[in-house]
Length: 292
Length: 259
Image 1: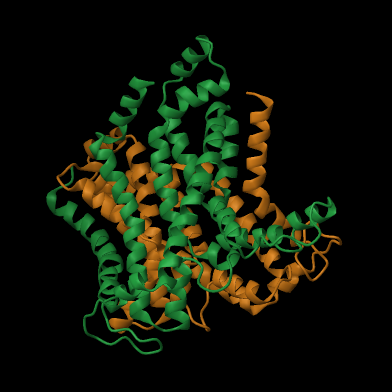
Image 2 (image 1 turned 120 degrees about the vertical axis):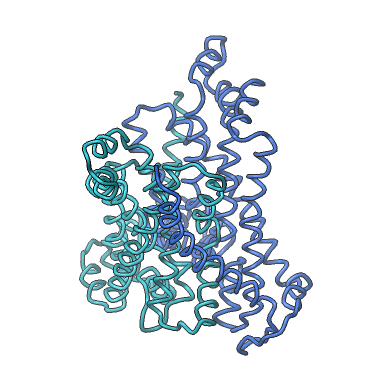
């Protein structure tokens, strides 16, 4: 057993590192968001809520924030719909296949996001695979504009966040007693009915965890909207970048960043609170199982 | 499993692999534009990409940054993981959550806050800012993998060493560390990838002189459409694939990501 003194000596450095590199800088970011901001000017001191007032009164900012939340919601829905069949399949195949599929499903995480964004550029561009095939098939005459639109952002983001959805659902599926699905089949339910009425409700905690992670990741994504979306600020993250790098309005940029922080952490916090109210994931799963 | 279900899975796997496969094919295109499938084949974009200092210099920057940040994090993560796995005390869960917070804070916000705080503190050197930010974003992965491997080792081996007269430090160094070495290596490898591929954190911290590879690629594709980026990307894909296989063998990929 570790003595109290050695516990402190082992633990303190890690806490100091995270405090120095995360807590204090975040505090300073929030402090900056109350500075008087002027485009192109170095941040001046003082304390004002003008930056936040501007964000919530100017329709330009409200529109981008709304669009970010809407597209992230779409991404979460699509990732849930296509994540479940994948997780269900991985759950049912042999251990060897599950290993191979894990590498495939996780590949968007392991390959640099810059690389996959570039790949989408080649696929979705006006001379890309999709448009060339559509023209060759005679379905369209002029190339469809997919690249540099919101659709491209949703496709690219879904691709990036899918691994988290699949792995969350799979983790929940693996905790299910396989006897339950067998019982459903013995009682005459086919594959689809078993998946929909027995397995799906039992995997609910996985869905909740997955949607939380996916939504939080989607709202904070930068590369996908920057590369695949329309030029100019089209997402909360690209808006922050514009404020900092092009307009040099650090206080306003800091205020937008603080808002993103609240949204991204808020959704995770909400999830944790919701679960503790239901008595924790394990108890919750049992409740669902009892009702199924 | 029905045919339609299998077809659906096949379609989803194509969706997942499509952008990656397309990049590999496009890198062998003989024309000046990245296309799939290439109308003419060539390997000329590989030497072309490797001759551009934009890519080689930033690749070196990214590699040392990832190596330094990951190495700095290991001793801190090891200390914390030992306490978190081996002791129970009030507030333990809170501390664990706290050390993993960098995972849920948007990385663009992390990059910005480091920029602002380091500037305010008078630290303007680009390498310092980058290392600070990358130590932070790789840290949770190190803590998690080292904790996972500490949880799984057989304590009786350590107890045997202690009984046989080895001191606590000796036991730790000669028994515990070798037992968790695969976990530490896997954690470092994954942390290396996280750092090497990072864009959003480095975005605000680099300058014209010192750029990371992902940012250099991002800048390049803004103005160029030639397949040299595809060639660089293919090399990165090969590296990632290799790393994935090593990780799967060492500890299992899902354990690293926390699935």
